[in-house]
Each structure stands twice: as C-alpha cells, then as structure tokens.
Image 1 (spheres, rainbow, N blue to C red):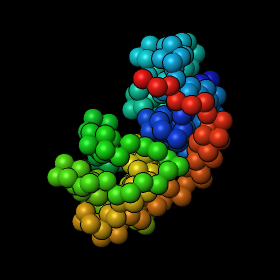
Image 2 (cartoon, rainbow, N blue to C red; image 1 turned 90 degrees about the vertical axis):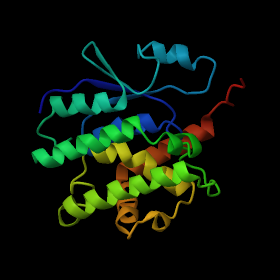
Image 3 (cartoon, one colour; image 1 turned 60 degrees about the vertical axis):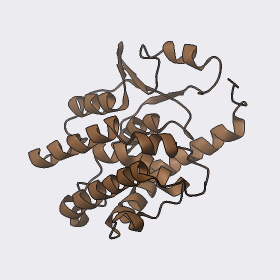
Image 4 (cartoon, rainbow, N blue to C red; image 1 turned 30 degrees about the vertical axis):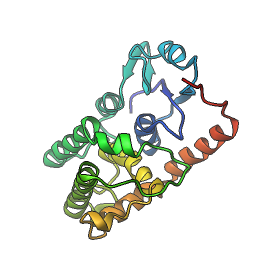
Length: 226
C-alpha cells in the first residue's frame, strides 16, 4: 500500500451527508487520516471552509499539497491510489454498475435530499409522500434490491458483496430512511433493500460516526439566524 498522508475536511456529522461518504469508506478500508471538522450554519463557516477547500464546500481531502473536493471525486482518487483495497469491485461488469449507481446517487434524488434532509440523531414523522418522492424512494429500493440480490448475498452484506464505494454513496440514505420512519415494503421492497440498509447502519464505523455526531450536538453553538 502506498504511504498515506491524508487530512479529511468534513462538516457536522449530524447533518453532512456528503462528508459521511468518504469518511466511511476510509474507515472501512483502514486508511489512516486526520479528521478536521468545520461547524456548518455559522457566520464563519464559509470562510473556514475556504481555508481548505477552493470549492467552498465539504468534504475535501488534503494530501501532500493536493486538495481533492467532492465526495465522489475523493472516492475515485482513493480507488486510484489504493487499487489493492477494493474501493470498487474487481469484476469489470460489477465495477461499471457500481460507478453507474454511485453517479446516479451523486447527481439525482433531489426530492429525497430536499424533503428528507439528513438529521442523523433525530426522529421525524413520515413526510408527505408525493409522486416525486415516492418515485425516488422506489428507485432506491430497486437499486438496492437488484444489486444486492444479484451480486451480494453469499459474498457479503452489501450491494456487491464486500463493502465498496457504492455503499459509501448510499449510506446517508439509509440514515434518512431511519430518521423519517420509511417502510420500504410500501415501495416494492421484498425485504432485500431493508436488510441492506440495516447492514449499512450496523457497521462499527457508522456507530463511530454517530457517537461523533452526538458529541457535536452536545457541544454545538446555536445556529446562525438568517
């Protein structure tokens, strides 16, 4: 394995779904890194992020003078840097599918993001399920059920068996479904998608992230009013 010198700039663990993605992957694959957290929704947040990330957004990965911004770009960079670790599936077909659904998650599901924002430690009533939200949740169930049913199962609990970048990309959605009490059986799930979500949430690294979120909430300053 190549020597590592990584600093990962993240936002609040209770809210920052994009930060969770590379953080979880790096934990799962045992890559050591320094975590630097910036509190969001504060008057100084933007300026503090810009000290590290030219995009003005988190997450950002700093390594040996290089700054890589955006969750998926970070995951791709780490896969290139550590091809032995399995950030993407080894099989070419599976790797193509994993990249495809990761890109779909990255670019899509705007209604889920807007109507079910990540709030890791909270529990909220079921939101109104309009046509757009229903369609996006059903699509998520389709992806999880099809991939885990075809490629997972006997080889592991995740979409392609062992954990990979695609699972990191979908992990925040599993927390959202728990936060808002979404019953996936109402969206065509035969139990496969629900089992997948539970496997993601049961990861020790997810428990570590959740403990960090709880500590942040205890120590957090009031949010800035705009």
